[in-house]
Length: 139
Ligand SMILES: [Zn+2]
Ligand SMILES: [Zn+2]
Ligand SMILES: [Zn+2]
Image (cartoon, rainbow, N blue to C red; front, side, top):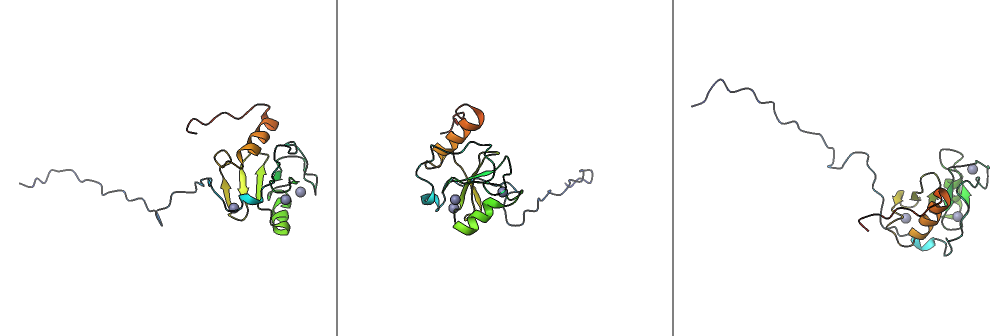
Protein backbone atom coordinates (compact mmCIF):
# COMPACT_ATOMS: atom_id res chain seq x y z
CA UNK A 1 0.00 0.00 0.00
CA UNK A 2 2.87 2.36 0.68
CA UNK A 3 3.50 4.58 -2.23
CA UNK A 4 7.03 5.65 -2.91
CA UNK A 5 5.77 8.74 -4.65
CA UNK A 6 4.68 10.57 -1.51
CA UNK A 7 6.53 13.86 -1.19
CA UNK A 8 8.99 14.26 1.59
CA UNK A 9 7.37 16.25 4.34
CA UNK A 10 9.59 18.71 6.13
CA UNK A 11 9.90 17.73 9.74
CA UNK A 12 8.09 19.82 12.33
CA UNK A 13 9.67 23.15 12.89
CA UNK A 14 10.41 23.13 16.57
CA UNK A 15 10.85 26.57 18.05
CA UNK A 16 13.37 26.50 20.80
CA UNK A 17 12.05 28.12 23.93
CA UNK A 18 14.55 27.79 26.81
CA UNK A 19 12.01 27.71 29.63
CA UNK A 20 8.72 28.24 27.92
CA UNK A 21 8.89 31.94 28.48
CA UNK A 22 7.95 34.44 25.84
CA UNK A 23 10.50 36.73 24.26
CA UNK A 24 11.68 40.04 25.72
CA UNK A 25 8.16 41.34 26.27
CA UNK A 26 7.79 42.84 29.71
CA UNK A 27 4.32 43.00 31.13
CA UNK A 28 3.46 45.72 33.61
CA UNK A 29 2.45 44.43 37.00
CA UNK A 30 -0.95 45.19 38.43
CA UNK A 31 0.23 44.93 42.00
CA UNK A 32 3.30 45.76 44.02
CA UNK A 33 3.98 45.57 47.75
CA UNK A 34 5.43 49.05 47.90
CA UNK A 35 2.36 51.09 47.04
CA UNK A 36 1.94 52.06 50.69
CA UNK A 37 4.91 54.40 50.40
CA UNK A 38 3.27 56.51 47.71
CA UNK A 39 2.62 60.14 48.70
CA UNK A 40 -0.93 60.80 49.89
CA UNK A 41 -1.12 63.98 47.84
CA UNK A 42 -0.34 63.28 44.24
CA UNK A 43 -2.85 65.73 42.85
CA UNK A 44 -0.22 68.47 42.96
CA UNK A 45 2.86 67.32 41.13
CA UNK A 46 5.65 69.16 39.32
CA UNK A 47 5.15 69.78 35.59
CA UNK A 48 6.65 67.19 33.22
CA UNK A 49 9.51 69.38 32.01
CA UNK A 50 10.78 70.12 35.51
CA UNK A 51 14.59 69.78 35.49
CA UNK A 52 16.38 67.21 37.60
CA UNK A 53 16.70 68.51 41.17
CA UNK A 54 20.39 67.62 41.26
CA UNK A 55 21.92 68.12 37.84
CA UNK A 56 19.26 70.29 36.14
CA UNK A 57 18.87 67.85 33.29
CA UNK A 58 15.96 69.52 31.48
CA UNK A 59 13.52 66.80 30.44
CA UNK A 60 12.46 63.15 30.43
CA UNK A 61 13.03 62.95 34.16
CA UNK A 62 11.36 60.76 36.77
CA UNK A 63 8.97 61.85 39.48
CA UNK A 64 9.47 60.16 42.82
CA UNK A 65 5.97 59.11 43.87
CA UNK A 66 6.97 59.07 47.53
CA UNK A 67 8.33 62.61 47.97
CA UNK A 68 7.60 64.20 44.56
CA UNK A 69 11.22 64.98 43.81
CA UNK A 70 12.08 65.15 40.09
CA UNK A 71 15.25 63.31 39.18
CA UNK A 72 16.94 62.17 36.01
CA UNK A 73 16.95 58.66 34.59
CA UNK A 74 19.52 55.91 34.61
CA UNK A 75 20.39 56.94 31.07
CA UNK A 76 21.41 60.43 32.19
CA UNK A 77 23.01 60.81 35.61
CA UNK A 78 21.08 58.06 37.46
CA UNK A 79 19.80 60.51 40.06
CA UNK A 80 16.47 58.70 40.45
CA UNK A 81 18.30 55.45 40.98
CA UNK A 82 20.61 57.14 43.47
CA UNK A 83 17.59 58.59 45.26
CA UNK A 84 16.12 55.08 45.60
CA UNK A 85 19.40 53.76 46.97
CA UNK A 86 19.62 56.58 49.52
CA UNK A 87 15.99 56.85 50.62
CA UNK A 88 14.40 53.55 49.58
CA UNK A 89 11.77 55.50 47.64
CA UNK A 90 11.15 52.85 45.04
CA UNK A 91 8.21 54.13 42.99
CA UNK A 92 8.80 56.59 40.18
CA UNK A 93 6.78 57.90 37.27
CA UNK A 94 8.53 58.57 33.99
CA UNK A 95 7.76 61.96 32.50
CA UNK A 96 8.88 60.70 29.11
CA UNK A 97 6.28 57.95 28.67
CA UNK A 98 4.28 58.11 31.94
CA UNK A 99 5.17 54.57 32.91
CA UNK A 100 5.59 53.76 36.58
CA UNK A 101 8.64 51.81 37.67
CA UNK A 102 9.20 50.08 41.00
CA UNK A 103 12.90 49.86 41.79
CA UNK A 104 12.29 47.27 44.50
CA UNK A 105 10.25 44.97 42.29
CA UNK A 106 12.44 45.85 39.31
CA UNK A 107 9.28 46.01 37.24
CA UNK A 108 6.87 48.32 35.51
CA UNK A 109 3.52 48.85 37.14
CA UNK A 110 0.27 49.34 35.29
CA UNK A 111 -0.72 52.79 36.55
CA UNK A 112 -4.07 52.66 34.80
CA UNK A 113 -5.13 49.55 36.67
CA UNK A 114 -3.64 50.17 40.12
CA UNK A 115 -6.12 52.42 41.91
CA UNK A 116 -3.54 54.26 44.01
CA UNK A 117 -1.52 55.14 40.92
CA UNK A 118 -4.29 56.06 38.50
CA UNK A 119 -4.86 59.61 39.87
CA UNK A 120 -1.22 60.61 39.51
CA UNK A 121 -1.04 58.99 36.09
CA UNK A 122 -4.07 61.02 35.00
CA UNK A 123 -2.67 64.22 36.52
CA UNK A 124 0.67 63.71 34.80
CA UNK A 125 -1.08 62.89 31.53
CA UNK A 126 -3.11 66.10 31.67
CA UNK A 127 0.01 68.14 32.50
CA UNK A 128 1.88 66.56 29.62
CA UNK A 129 -0.77 66.41 26.91
CA UNK A 130 -3.32 68.99 28.05
CA UNK A 131 -6.18 66.50 28.05
CA UNK A 132 -7.43 63.54 30.04
CA UNK A 133 -6.10 60.10 29.07
CA UNK A 134 -8.35 57.98 26.82
CA UNK A 135 -10.36 55.40 28.71
CA UNK A 136 -9.30 51.86 28.20
CA UNK A 137 -12.15 49.85 26.79
CA UNK A 138 -11.61 46.78 28.93
CA UNK A 139 -11.75 48.66 32.23
ZN1 LIG B 1 20.18 64.42 37.49
ZN1 LIG C 1 11.60 60.31 46.96
ZN1 LIG D 1 7.27 47.19 44.28
